[in-house]
Amino acid sequence: MSAPLRLRRRSSLFALGTFLAIATLAHATSERQSAPPQAASQATAPQSQPKEDSDRQHALDVYHAGKFVEAMPLLEKLAADNPSDSVIKEAWAFSVMAYAASLSDADLRKKARVRARSIALEAKKLGDTSYLLQSILLVPEDGSEPAFSDRKEVDDAMKKAEADFVRGDLDKAREGYLRALILDPQNYEAALFTGDVYFKQHIYGSAGEWFARAIQINADRETAYRYWGDALTAMGKTAEAREKYIRAVVAEPYNQRSLMGLNQWARDANIPLNWVRLTDKSKATTTEKGGTITIDSSVQKDDPALAAWLVYSASRLQWQREKFKQEFPNEPKYHHTLREEAESLHLMVSVLSRPENASKLEPSLAALVKIDQAGFLEPFALLNRADSEIAQDYVPYRAAHRDTIYRYFDEFVVPKVQDQPAPAK
Image 1 (spheres, rainbow, N blue to C red):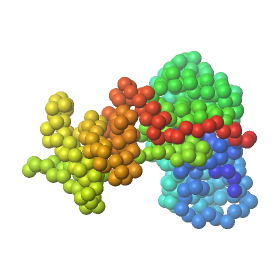
Image 2 (cartoon, rainbow, N blue to C red):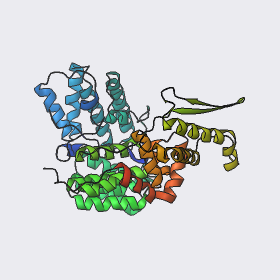
Image 3 (cartoon, one colour):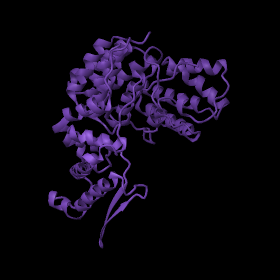
Image 4 (cartoon, rainbow, N blue to C red):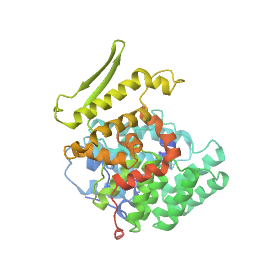
């Protein structure tokens, strides 16, 4: 069995929050070998794997080598002979997507993308839940593709460079990305993909310089940090990579890709991330008749958590009934905010931190007390307890407190490590 594919490279299909063209996994066998959850169908498809045969192995080897156009007819034939093989169908779908990116005619690209998506749907019906497959399914049903730029000459240069990248003409692809960057010095993808060419050529120092350039263009996108972390890891600079993976999450904490990067780094470094998860034991509900607090029956009367959760819910009840309107008079209706959550958690900690409770706290509540004492309650609320409403407060908080968020990760979530030898090529 070939080494598992690792979804790292932005597909030409991912920029601006959606697909822009084609991802490549050609470097998978020469870089870190561990694949993140759902990074490859081999790791996630629940089906029984078919018995290996030479044709199937050859097709997957060609695919793993990044020769997607060459692999495409091989995978198509295998899919016809083995219609229940989701691994083959996912690889086939991805190869068709790669083929689409190599086409110069927009209509032909669109038709190929529609076909790739339909093949991916077949793999999904077979139980494939891989992240790569989900990415392919982000393609619109009509196969349309967003632009790299609203300036035609920049968009054309980027798409031509992407086609060169897919064909493996890396020097020509780099020239195209640089041409686009000259036309538009603020084009994030042009700088990012230039670095990615160097990464694929194993020139990791130069790759990092271009990822840094992309970050200068937009520090609030996760991809360049994550790619830079990959380059540092390839150089054996595990500790420096840690910082980049953390900053990727700080940039976009609700983006699955940034979390995958940090999680994969942690697995490679063989360390657990210290996420503190609170299981809510109370609920505050407001109706026209008044408010109610419901306590989970599992909480015992002598448990200090009982009073803590009561205080927490009482605070939230107050926010729902009157305080939200006082604090946000211009808001048309109540919604859960960072300010409410942090204040309610802090009141909860005031109960938990009483001396008589110190030895009675479950680990997550004891950790909450330490997080509050260190001044990281807001990052904790945003990163560990965010619902869709609290998440709306992340961007303004990050703008004013980016370093605080980083320090929360650095001091509480991600253990420090020593540099490790670079992976053998």
